[in-house]
Image (cartoon, rainbow, N blue to C red; front, side, top):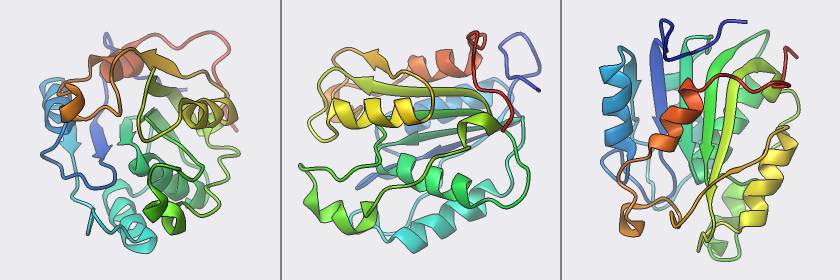
Length: 202
């Protein structure tokens, strides 16, 4: 399995997917894109349509157009509602595929009591069976007090993906208003040596 390491050739491309109400210029997305660019990767933060009134089909189409068929040199980082969108797209990919690294920040599969306007988008979530086995490096990040996504939601997602959520203390929902304008924990997740017992091929 081809791995992404800080001492190796590193990722060839990085895709950063924002969440509800956000733009590519918000929060830590631009900072992270710059970090990947400095490491020699082609980094993109696509603007998803109508972020304040997201449509599942339109968001899926935008992510599909950017992601294409991933490979071992591809890194995908998603935040909040972007996590569900990315997982649905990965689940829909036909045939064999690999993804070098997947980092989900404040991700969830379940409806959010704090944001009932997203109920129709979230629906029944996503069946994530088989995704982890196709990812070389997988990490789920959450804070210790997220006002929008219950910590139990993110922990459940991590468990279904066969991992444990990493806690970033005091990060809130990982917004600029929470003081989060850089997120080195994402780079650490991508560049760290894979832990023993990480998922193998599906």
